[in-house]
Image (tube, rainbow, N blue to C red; front, top):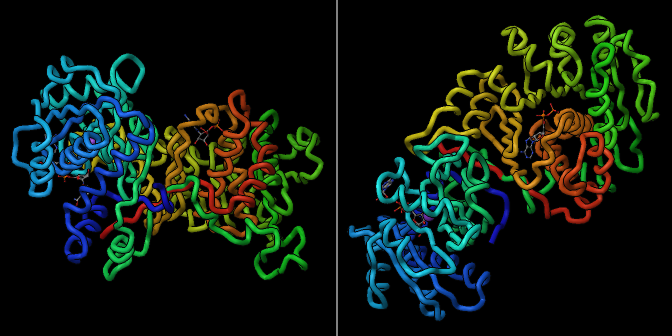
Length: 546
Ligand SMILES: NC(=O)C1=CN([C@@H]2O[C@H](COP(=O)(O)OP(=O)(O)OC[C@H]3O[C@@H](n4cnc5c(N)ncnc54)[C@H](O)[C@@H]3O)[C@@H](O)[C@H]2O)[C@@H](O)CC1
Ligand SMILES: Nc1ncnc2c1ncn2[C@@H]1O[C@H](COP(=O)(O)OP(=O)(O)O)[C@@H](O)[C@H]1O
Ligand SMILES: [K+]
């Protein structure tokens, strides 16, 4: 079952399995038996009454897992039909195949056999797992296309994928040989059982859609995971998932009795909770910045000031009354204001206007405050290499894919290419490369959000279940939340991660019909829930291996 929030690349997973087997304490056969058992157990959990299963076994160890599933389901009273390949797999899979052959036969793994065979309740997809290197072709491609029509939507069986939907690159969530946007052949699983830890592809790209429900099964590799990944020569940076189980990164934030900076709670006051400045734009542009400012207040910044141009100041006179307003005419005015060191976090971009954002940014960056850069300022940045060079480690950039393409066109182009080989270039790779290039935290938005730190640490948040979050102004609210958390003293990576988590949880709590204005006011409910269930939220982390 899902434990912790660590995300592993397929290379890391292989290294861990090899280390476990090299220790002599566990064999490849043991691991395969545990993997197959985990899948069979999940099937039996969902179909407590023995049914009919078709098990599709590929040429490698993923197929080996499939033969284990077939044997265990048969033992549990299921009617099992196996389709397999006429090849000689590695020794472990060969042994599992032999054990199955003592029970039943193996029909050829062809689309015709699959289509013409008796109906089944579950179709176990054990064709390819982490060993996929190129796009499936011919017969296998035809089988995957056939499975793509399943997922329980018609009379065909529910697909249960072993480790991943076959054909999917587990490092990127892309289907090899198919467009990134989907639409080609791909098995849509009802359930995917992955082993030890999720891989990036389960959480980004097409992965969350293709995998269906994801169960991560423990196959007893934890101690080798720690030794392998934390051992000598490894970079101490990890990839994490932000999801239920994600530990809130900062004690200061989650506990009302905790300390904040130097101040104990008994001596704490609004300034010890930080002062956030949200830079707004000219007339008729105030809404976006106001959304950000409200979110920063709700998430717990001690004070929030919104700073529009002088001629727009009167537009900001409405509620919330807790919000302070101050005209900021130009970069000089901003510098004067930032002489007050208590202003410790700034949000620039939402509703700011590209020209004004460009005018203010150089001085803002020189002031070295924790800064969230969103919307218009990202466009300004993309047009000015000097501004880009001024970014620093306390900056968080929050582009959606369109803004990202303006900032890093070459990285975005690579993401458009149809991948033909695994591991395919991914959104995770793109965000990491961007963060390393610009020296700031990059939060690349979408239903799959990737947050990357220049040192290689990265976090993934999947919000495929809240499509209603894609609504005008939701990004402005997110920028405000992160700014508020920066004001509270969280690091840029943690503020971006926690902001993303709270943002999606607020949307989930509200449900369909959400507009961006609703989000800040749901935050208190989310905060209460987070404090109550400190270890029950959702962010995934990946470890780059050198
Ligand atoms: N290594 C281990 O110890 C364990 C592995 N396990 C299972 O083993 C899987 C990985 O096994 P493998 O490394 O054997 O890899 P796979 O079983 O995923 O497939 C690899 C085989 O498919 C071939 N192949 C790759 N792409 C192809 C394509 N497009 N068309 C045709 N053939 C293609 C490869 O040449 C290789 O023969 C995991 O996903 C997991 O299911 C589990 O049993 C747990 C333990
Ligand atoms: N399909 C989706 N499912 C869930 N969340 C999404 C989806 N598309 C976008 N989001 C999220 O919604 C927010 C939209 O932000 P953004 O694109 O900046 O909108 P705006 O500029 O209108 O504020 C981001 O947090 C993004 O991650
Ligand atoms: K599979």
